[in-house]
Length: 244
Image (cartoon, rainbow, N blue to C red; front, side, top):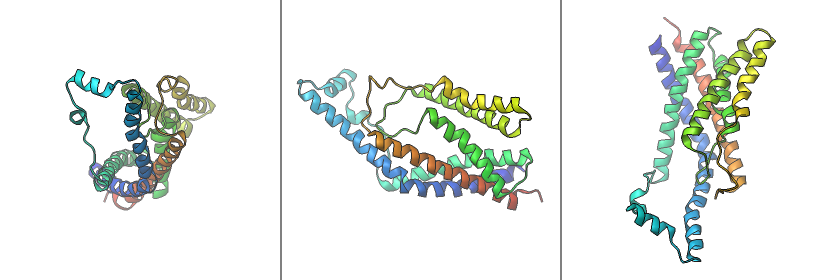
């Protein structure tokens, strides 16, 4: 049975990964390209400002550390094809991982197996892993300021766990007490607050309008990803996942 679930997860991951990559190519990736132009222009603007004071912080920093900018530059995709290929690979691997979780949950929950049931579980996955965590930590574009990554990861994991518990209590809890507890669990991470930088001391080179478009585009494509993944998992389990 585990082998069947794994095969279903792989197939569903490829389907959902290909679908969301196409969707991202339409809106999300072009927005990232736009943000990167602001990110690339920021150092040039900073250097122009430094020249008015006769200082060159970038030069001083390289001398102090003993490294040049070329040596410290991080590797990245060199062209559009590489970027698209790595995006597709990442989406497929993500789809396979979440697909396995969805398939195992659908099978062992015992509430039926179909593409419609899979979509419902997919919606739950979107709410838990994307929508509610994004309220506190919206998707970030290149060039945006952000808090320490370790702090953000801890908060995100806590938000996902609390949301999963809350959704479980709302869906399966008997009585008003469990429903209220479900709402409390979902709201708790938002009330506690996600880690953020002090925006009064730092500024982003990315326009706020572009950031807002990016958040909407990411949530829309992620929602479609979970719907396709859930429907694929449910449909494939219904067709091929049942024991012989």
